[in-house]
Length: 340
Image (tube, rainbow, N blue to C red):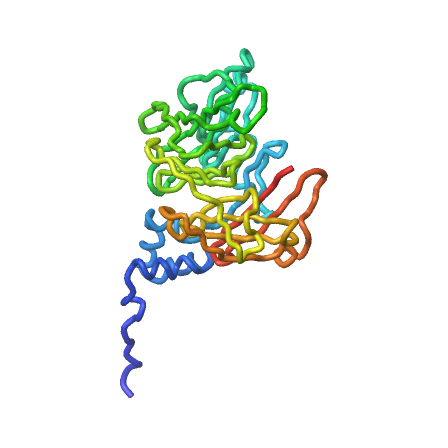
């Protein structure tokens, strides 16, 4: 018999780019790296900026201030991916500033508040890239005010190299009585592209209060999503034109019906919500997905006990409660929750 068997057409060549990206989004990160070697087409699809939000990313570690600044290396070996000392900040800056307070983190950038030694009531915002060892001070020093305690960061490197800072202004009279004391009146929004701040009055149809000690927020497609104390998700875009309210997911068929606070983040480019209710459901975790961010229709994806996830009940360390799990397994997406 002359020659070898003739190769037939590759069936994957018949797949459209959208279908192929959807398939690749369901494999593990290490498998995705191997897939990038299959062909130039696959390599280009995986490397394309428009697909980064859909495809799995590797998790290198956690940067945290609890109580000291530190970086938790997931691999447990080798040199940490980032320097938690933030040695990139020049000494002259440390001489002027009293210290750093971590406010938020978004796609590799940190938002910090720095108070001056000479006048503790005066502060600046710093946006730091610890991996690249670069930082920038947000223009204009600001005076501390109880009406502006909550600030969040928005950054989408796949879309733009520019970032936004959202500073929410509250109706706060200082006596701490009543929910209306901390109702959001509006937001000052800073754009690194223009170098300017702009103030926009709140367009939320209900009174919203935010916890300044909670930094749980998501920034995607030019919109910031934050957890509100009213068991709502509040959203505002970078222009301050669109203000939305999204109810927490609730289902009478779920043991998490009408439960309290939760946690939001992105997985495969979609907004996910996780919460638990140890009183009703014996330390179970529920994970929901908002398939279309323009709607308010949540889909319950998983309900699982912590015993099944980590083979133990929640770990108590002094007065702190620590949960760590991974969801979903094939997307290399981690959920970390730590509170006192």
